[in-house]
Image (cartoon, rainbow, N blue to C red; front, top):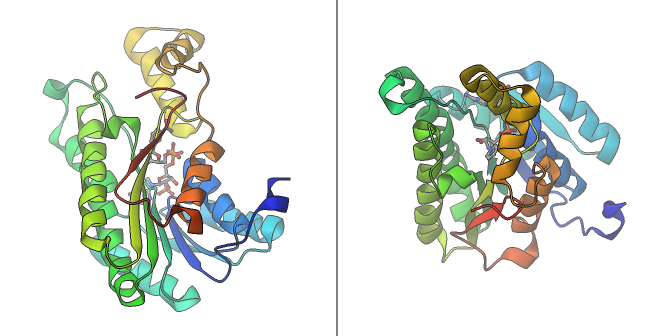
Length: 264
Ligand code: NDP
């Protein structure tokens, strides 16, 4: 097992993962638990979060709590982080993973879709960063990892709002890295390609609906975008996050690390 050679370099350290109950966020929570951290998992569906906390305890002996949080809601984010701090102290790691995706041509995109994607993916990331940074600055230590996307680095057809929000996350990451570079904090983005989660399944379903493809044809269309020809696994994204939180990555900040099987 990989754990046999792992150093538990996050032992006794508090990590917050937004959207930590399923998909990529759940895999990140597992990796950080394996590395020894105490975890706060945030999201809207606390039932899913609580189940995952129980798994982390059973599999790794990790302390983990579920905290209800809609990252679009400034007051709710403040309350959630207060609750997280009360349980395990100031976070050393923040992973901004919560996200949503929706496609469609710009001319037919309702303003509500545009505003929602920017609110969840970009403003949510900013709000959570603001919650952890004061204590990280005082401690002169901390790791922030923002889960952006290859859509933060290139354009995809009919994905304007999602691409804009993820480019924003990469820009926020780079700027915040400069703001904190002299005080022991690192801020990086991880940019996955199509990853095997509910979100990628939704993209396949959308292709079926929009283009009249069969599910198999739609899946092949997506796989053609990835040079290695298979979807990225959530654990592959989580491994990059774990490394960014390690003592080996102290000089890595302001980066957008692509985990996409050769894409981008
Ligand atoms: P999923 O749809 O599987 O999970 C999304 C997670 O985000 C859920 O845990 C969900 O929890 C949480 N979430 C959504 N909206 C909110 C909100 N308003 N407040 C708090 N939490 C929220 O997606 P993935 O795991 O695939 O995606 C995770 C991240 O990775 C996202 O940022 C996504 O953009 C990014 N990404 C995904 C790719 C893919 O192909 N899958 C590729 C590139 C990037 P809940 O519903 O309980 O709130």
